[in-house]
Length: 478
Image 1 (cartoon, rainbow, N blue to C red):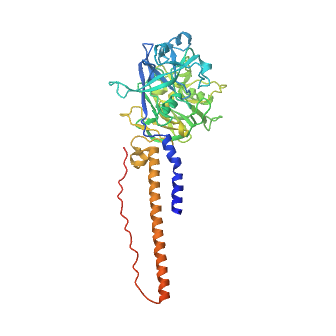
Image 2: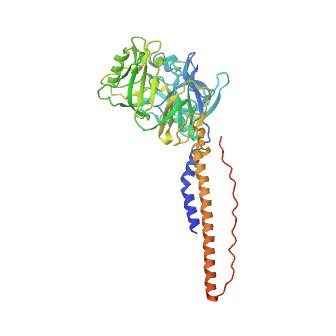
Image 3: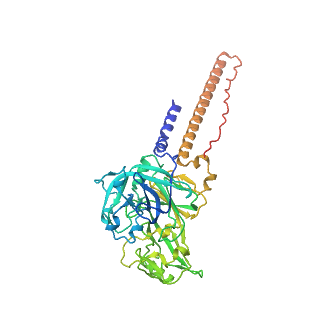
């Protein structure tokens, strides 16, 4: 009975693992969406963003990935008639006509998930089919994942680009994909690339929903905690900002003021130039020869060509260097934005910084990870994000055990198999112990009778039961 009780307690101890396995099916493959310039609905301009269609038939959009916003939003066909957005017709990510979609359902009474959305523009809410296109090779047709009943905000006017794929803390698309068992967890991974007009580069990006691309980053993966609330849930501590000029001279930009020991910053894709402390910005202007410009995003302009680099080091040692082609584009704009001394807005590591970084976000574990990006990977290696499992770059996990390779599901399977093995071992030990006690009891009884009768006789040892050796085949995973 004691053995049975221990077995029951052990099985109860496995319940949390078994429940976790049901909640997160880590066998579901992630959804890969490329980010590049393409034709979009309602304009002849090619726009840079995620390859997504909305409605039936699909109206193609190039939506910008937003780390701060939660909603997926598109521009109404008349948006530019009521907007002050610069170069509006080529900056919205496409246009959407609800009355041209047979699957559109108006939900005007729905409350906004983004607290500040009503303060920036007017819009209507509805639900529609959203087509997530996977386009591995531009010479081949794209495949698609269709999300039914996806909440969509149609912006009617505003001052900023409305075409957003909201990936914030309460992302509606992650919630919908997870609810429809299209992704294993509420997670995503992002490489922005450099193909937007402001960036001026040619490298395309990608976003992986419910997983990551193991070939798109390299080196050590750095881990951070997500802090819900505020303008961004992704926050880091900057320990150093330094400038290297073309002569090899290295200069710290922190100075000796209030931020000499570093500062806290948010990660954001809402702006291209970084927003650094006033003292740091002034030191950058002096060292690089920068001045304010009239560019709409507030980027500082370099007075003369600059062939140096800018390095930002976080407090855990993660270092990101912005190369010379990011430091100054053809128009002389820098990746650092102007800032006044009275400005109290958060400090921001923006799209310029993220263009060199691979970002992996796992909301279910309240964690995000940063690694050095591989801008032009020779192939794609998609892997599922299992909660509480740190992503690994391509090739690193090859030395792990088969159960570890399978992520959390492998860990759970390993725990269950190991637990069953422990149960079998306990049973074997219990049986052996009972046999030993039986043999000792029999021996005592024989000795007692021998003493009473004063006679000798032979009592054979109880036969031993040979336990057959099981041959276990090592588990393997793909």
